[in-house]
Length: 413
Image (cartoon, rainbow, N blue to C red):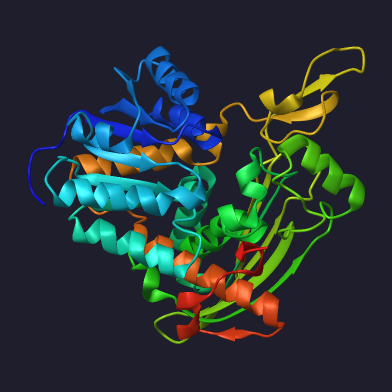
């Protein structure tokens, strides 16, 4: 779609929770963008996020009481869908209707991970975006993390020409549990930790294994095998603690979702070579904070990254007061001792690069590096892993029955 760049790109945000505030931090490092609108069903939350955007110099920003009002304002060129998983499809349907009926001049849409709770929803998200003629981007921040971008560049430029393509990528993400009740509710979120966090691990591993410049589907999924478990939050003392913290709607003594998952996906490249993705995710890790660990292995080389191996550390004795340690790193579980500090979490985790990339792609009417097509592919692999964990057998891909598959924790209680 030729034309002069849109400057600035006017962005509307749907959602006002934890991830929306993370994105605001990321937008601080992006040029040619303004946050012009915020929608959330809770007035106080949308007002707070709009105020935060104004205070950060990202405005002028206005809070809207409906998605339709924000789209009809003609004040936004693109929207970031950052709302809870169970609402994303309804928001995409509203966007589709407004654009198709010419009640909005919206040009682009981006959606936070995972794209949807199951394959049927993910495919509808993609269909609605393309039928409305919208450019679309899948917000998978770990793909855009500086360490991932730099590590992939070095491996494929320096190591692959003499050592051959990488054949194994390992990705792990662990922390002590989500912030909000809806994440813990299987029907609302769509599953447990496998859906919530393995979407990161699957896609960052697939990205690292894909040859630069090649389409992501140049790697063809062949099979998926997974194990899930309830390690911590179904234990009576922790189930009760979770209920007291999150409310009566989260009862892991009766309707739990998995808090641990391990998955393996085998793929083939265009020459028929086998490559492997190994992933591990957990809501049962209690340590210095959110831990992301990545590895790429080839015949003559290896790459590794750990988010908690930060250069900055702080020691606080037991005599130093203070509240929770999340001002140092997300999901920190202590307030004292020798603790790693991540000086710019939005940058380290990839939010800044991600938003910069999406803004530039949308401004210039170009296809982003991550699109809803990638979001669909990730959900398809996740559903295969859930089916494998449920049946105790390897799932061969492609599998037509995954189109209607719903993970066990997402089924009605």
